[in-house]
Length: 329
Ligand code: DGY
Image (cartoon, rainbow, N blue to C red; front, side, top):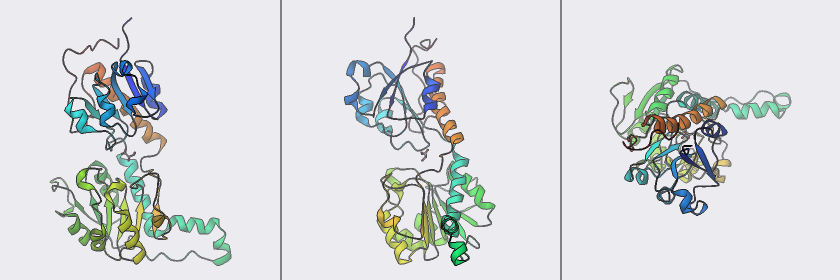
């Protein structure tokens, strides 16, 4: 009998990933990605990893036969890609299958923030409509606004497509202008913030995006300004945001992501003009199932056909010739 390829799953991952993998692979589970939890002899037999969350350089180094890391989520900032790339290990993420869900949630969060819909529902549920009458008119509206998208990748484009239907102007900032879009391009984030009154951040967590939305950018957005963040909390200086929201430097914010999840700064929780969600932009059963399937499909594609389906740009590797492609049969 040919031994099955061994995969490591550190920490928790959607059950669907495990269900898809369990017959074809020998799946080893450990509580978290910690080398101390996996004996050297066992570590040596691991060829692939499926992970939701973090996989650091020490864990990667602990796995001498590792060929592929299939990461759950479009953002793969939890995986030390540089360490993987240096060893020729492929890393995959789950792009595209979540674009529409995240874009839908972004629009919902924008409307919640501007029209205060969660507060209006609470007003009804608390009996205040009966006792006190109509919910106060919202000072803010989407009408007549211009939205700036910070990060016009695949999800940013899906957000822009939806925004078109709301009749708001659309502009964007990315490192380089895109030739395939009709939206106004601003070469810097500050210029974009100056030009719009809704700023929607959908950029990945990288060295270049760290706390780029700071007091300066928020001041540029202005007193009618609304910040929406559905990318990573890493991108926002949360202290400056709480201060500017409190002082009326900007009007409101809607956040699905935070710097130190699941911890949300008390200063933000205390503010009435911020709408907060617990990182749910892609969190429907259907979309998370599609993401789980893509994690599994990448592993099948790698071990059965020699190339991953959705490798990240830093690791465009194919499986090395000479590896035993028969081992699953
Ligand atoms: C992602 O896929 O990166 C989203 O943030 C959901 O986790």
